[in-house]
Length: 68
Image (cartoon, rainbow, N blue to C red; front, top):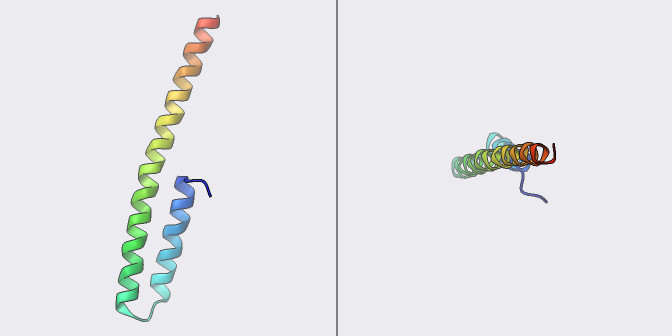
């Protein structure tokens, strides 16, 4: 499975669903902590994806300008 922000967000949603279904407080809290960690990973990955896309757009613009 590729490490994408969407995959991390899906995992966070699963943890949140597990927390909502948990009867035990400790299990609920553990799942909520896991969801928070997955959300943090998703946000960091999203920023990386955006930076990569910006870098690629800039490189393509420079390439096009050099070939013009």
